[in-house]
Length: 505
Image (tube, rainbow, N blue to C red; front, side, top):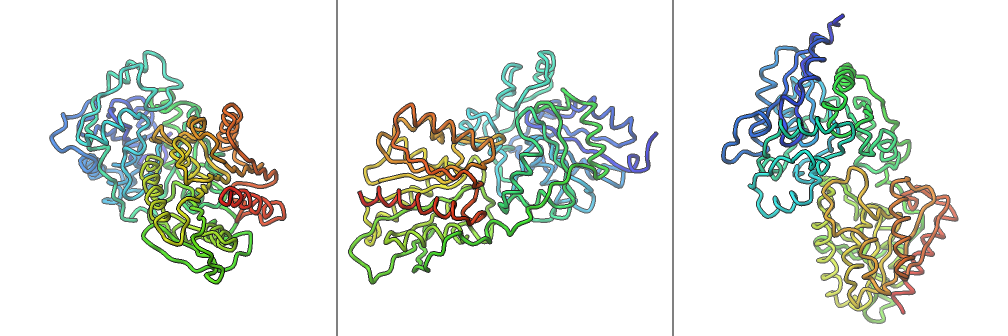
């Protein structure tokens, strides 16, 4: 029997790159049987749609979705964005925010203002092509190539053939134009549907929220619900009936609610050690925390602290102002070493090259400062910044005395699409020679992050790297603001002492 709620609801369904409305045939049929109005989007230039005109880009697809919203007769509109299509869905929703009652993220990313859809493209060949030729057209995948665009669990050979038969080349500018968000959607309820064959689960999202990192806290708001589908990236083909049922539940406001982090936000927590205030200077992206000038005995060694990420572009305060990184820099200054913090631009997983360039420039500026001993520099990374060690391990300059990593992520995690292959610390570690590495490992790490550390340690053992391991068995990710215990305080002192030893060697 049809309920009033279902009769009053319209679904606009938009799928990932290359594909269009026909991909949703079975899902649309089930939703209509339940009494819903259904509009399956075929965006300009995608499968089954009109040939792309010159200049077809993300804004073209946003306009396509706006037209679909304007054609809805039901009073309630639920927008469903799968993969790439979450970008035009969000862009259109903010133009018709008064009509949209819910946005469903179907196995998609969480793009922010200014993000390029290209950041979520897993095919590195396509990334390289569009970085060089932003207007190029991307050929649709052959049946045996779809795994380069997402997990194909649940798809038979016939499904993959059908997927290719329904696909069309993707206009490059749809992936290289930035998404512009105004904040108009902040009060629109959302749902997330996770396809767990890719490895991302509600439990994993909960861990991100529990970590206290500010960019994930909105996922625990009351208007956000989560669902899981035990299948791959194309549930409209592999699990159409289950997907339709899940969409109806999402439209009704159901879904698993995450538990908010019952702690002070990460960026507001004090550093676990008392470090004397040090004079601070800011030049562009680089902050210097300086030792007491009364102890001046010539140029000083320096440690460049590299914060984690990816983090939102508009984060306030920015990481270099967090007590965590200010605390480390002041602690270094208290030991007679210049503590430097770089404000790098790691805002999406595709931003590692940009962040690496920011770090390289910060090191250049740091070494050019007359108060700095340019031949005694250490690099210290945290969390997702751990991948940024790669360039320095692959080709360590003679002035780099040491690299350090605290609760690092040392390989791309599930859902980290678009990471440049050069950021692979374990793979390049054999090139580091005898460059000392000080790694702080926490015992209560998230399993997926812990696996990257284990792989790095195995690579270090195999190549005989000069690695010093600081183990903190009872500590969690972010312990230096989470867990002020004797064990964690000693771990920070131990790591700093090791870095200082290499700087003064």
